[in-house]
Length: 111
Length: 113
Image 1: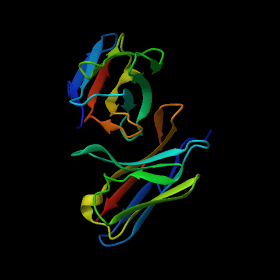
Image 2: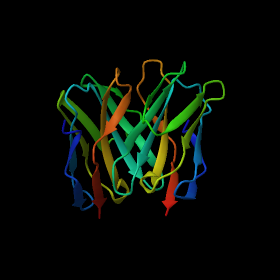
Image 3: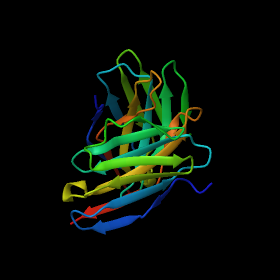
Image 4: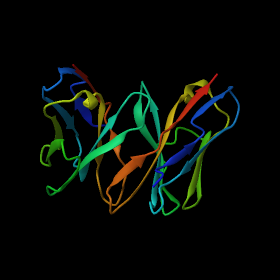
């Protein structure tokens, strides 16, 4: 039931782009993306809802393919501050607010 | 707003001792979630409350773990007796259905020796 994230880790130079994927075997109501820096709490980035609605970070974009139960997070023109571990959390809906998180993708942005 | 408040921030205890972790949600948030994070298992949901009522406790590992939410501004997660394998970072997160996401507290780093 845990979503699968790929890649597990990625290293970029400042200014490069990256895509992080999140895939579920179950039908989803929404996908939530968080970033966690070392030693800190996860910070909400954005939510993608069934039906196409999105809410979140101005500089980060994402997609949600409901049929394939997949979401992708697009990090363009990466900055040093983008470094951290990115988690997707999936919600199946049906009245439950429960999120199941993937194992994370560690992003390192170097100068 | 002060955000989600957790205490203590760090706890070191010996095996067999009782541990109590505390969480104060963001004012107005009626959903509260307790998570555990380890390198091996990642971020796991232990239990969540809505309007102070436990909704899903399927993630609570065993009877040694218990959680309460006596009112809208306070929740506790208790481990009794604690074991070394309980060592982890425990996060409390809160939210509302209208906001449709969860905001995490700073976490409690627990080390059981």
